[in-house]
Length: 72
Length: 159
Image (cartoon, rainbow over all chains, first blue to last red; front, side, top):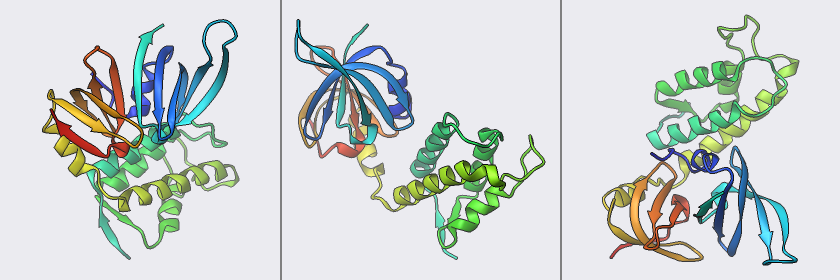
């Protein structure tokens, strides 16, 4: 059901909205790609009108946990 | 020469790294699948030499593959050499890192139970639905799914 490795599993969730917990906080965004041990998300900063998006690359072993929020 | 046994976990990790190698751009035109098979054959002996890692890399590079009669060790194989060096370094780090096997076994015994997992930043509570090679899957009471990195788990408790 699930892939053996986190990077492979995340590759199955491209386009999914996620909340990623790192050792010092959360980031929220949409998974855009997974390359090797790197995860790229389109991070949403702020809420509603005036919010901006930033492309953020995260080293997968540095991730504490990932919550799947919704499938876009 | 030092001969070390290769654990299943280390082997799986190395094969995963080799999987990512196949998607990496390289200057060589030789199929990386063949390189994967070569290293896989080396791994099947369940031993690896840590005394002479350069010799291991050179033996892989100098071995002709089924799709080419020219050894890989040419001027265009620099990228492949660097990748193999990185893989070998990663593998050796993994080999000497404390094993996650004990933690995985503990978590496997708690499959389908309500557990509390703590990491350095947060504590997650939910049903443990899967334990994979380097992560676990936890479903919280609201139905949301969490992938938790095995290496970041600090404590485990059954509720």
